Length: 131
Image (cartoon, rainbow, N blue to C red):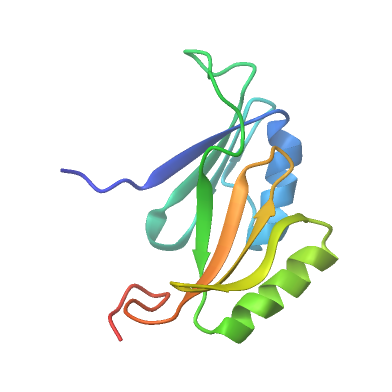
């Protein structure tokens, strides 16, 4: 089976959400229109932002039902990302917390999509390699 390499989020205003993700990811989109914005990330992974008003077939849900997850290399990096994102004005749903898998926090994008940042305490590192 093919490996997924593309996530699409249904958003209210693609250009506004595109500006948000551009600042968060530190890169410009490769495609940008009033109904769709596309980012190409590491290893060719794609993030699309599609207008919930024009997607066909119509979307039955909005943000909050899933998470985009960002893996970091240390617990201090999680705390630093939290400080950065808080300073940018992102709504924080969960402050940095030690959980059974490691250190994590959760923020929300403008459409209430959950953004989880974590450090895995054992097993897999952020780059996907085993410790």
